[in-house]
Length: 319
Image 1: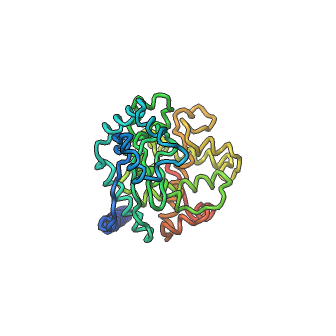
Image 2: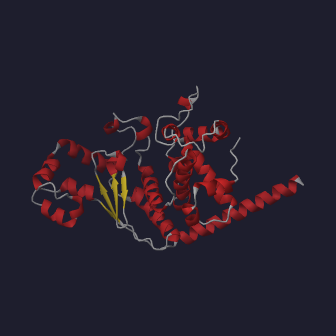
Image 3: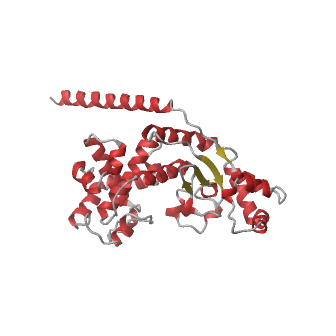
């Protein structure tokens, strides 16, 4: 009997892999246009005489609140010039991330038929890492100076848990996050479970639209952090259940387990071993279980309530 069950599991696994492979082949054939406009390079090379033409070509990049003297001062600023040089070194061309953006757009087009490829414009932002990427229906902005590598000297005063994702490999993951936020419907989040499921939806959205990225890159964890989360999944879940935290609406729980932080706050000795945002990770596993155990499309899941997803997920943490 055991041999028969093992054989059945292997057959199901192979069939699942073949199905996923065929889907990815189909998606890879979708025609989308990706054209990266290097505004950062144009601004780095512009002269005061050439500024009016650049403003004419990119009017949305120049606030009307500032006159030309402000922009000229920025062009001549030594720190801005150093920033331009470092971005040029790290990104002499767009090939490193352009192919991944194309694949992202193909997946978005597959799941959202009305999706149209936006203009992709790269900029520098004085390392404004709270807005590394900005996504609208027609324009995507990517601040390349926030992707120079976690050990870059520009990031010396930034906490490690933040700058660990200042890597070029995170560009497409950050874009996918922004698209997820645009497409998720969920009523006002009140409980810890609401927050967990919301971010679980974001991360499952990444499973669908950037399947070529590994789980560390989707989550924004190092391999060691992800391994810790996997190894301790059962204990984390037991902690939440035994203390009746799932339906608790105390806002401090969001700070402890959802928001970016150097570690999650269980108020135990193991705290500093844990990665931050562990509630997001668990929410991801719940949503994955829901999609595995229910005949739901990506769009249906994005619009489902947290209660519906949780109740029908049949989630069991790994031991």
